[in-house]
Amino acid sequence: MTLAPRIVPSVLPADFARLGEVCRDLEVAGVDRLQFDVMDGRFVPNLTFGPDVIAAVRSWTTVPFEAHLMVEEPDLLAHRYVEAGCGIVIVHAEACRHLHRTLGLVRELGASPAVALNPATPASAVAHVLDLVDLVLVMTVNPGFGGQAYLGSMEPKIAEVRSMIDRSGRQIDLEVDGGIAPDTIAGAAAHGADVFIAGSALFRDPEGFAHAVTDLRTRAEAARR
Ligand code: DX5
Image (cartoon, rainbow, N blue to C red; front, side, top):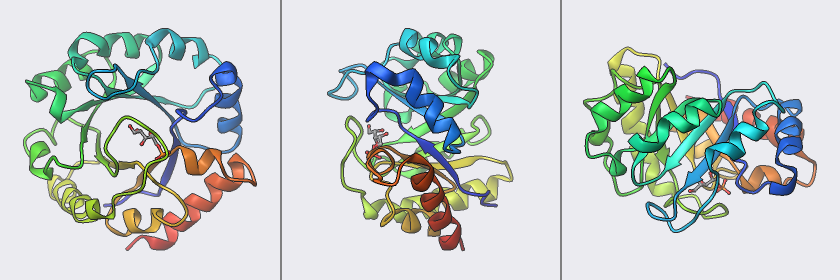
């Protein structure tokens, strides 16, 4: 069953000199959560937020935080991001030698375990861990940078993961991330996504955060089947 659409900004495009204020402003704009794109310069060719940066902005807002760990060794880092205030920890299937064990570790830390799939990774990679996760993230770009073009070719995979989730009988968020914008969100929603990560499209809306959040949510609602 697809839940009501949730809009979750990636703060990757934010002015990092004002990150706390931006997080506060995004809460005021009505976002459902905030996502921090954690990159280690190894799993992806970019370097971003350490746990201390997230801890520093935790008190600026009350919305839940999710850490998208685009890192080579999530087992070594997950606890730092939970301690920093992230209630959801997303690990990449491609980065986990023992994905089943890593997801269990996240649950033991008291966070919601989530697994991300890069564009080339089949939906079947999560077939045997759906009982362990609260969220599956289907990447609609190759990870590492914001502002990339949405990969419409991922829509059949979104639909496949939606079917797997529905057959599991568990309440699992189906999140998409990458190139989500007014002209692409409907396709992702129509294929079964219910959580939408938006970075550049949200930050560049000339009418501001609240307009962007409402517009994206409305478009996703209208596209649901
Ligand atoms: C890729 C990042 C981006 C970011 C959103 O590694 O995960 O997808 O969150 O970027 P936009 O919305 O600008 O494509």
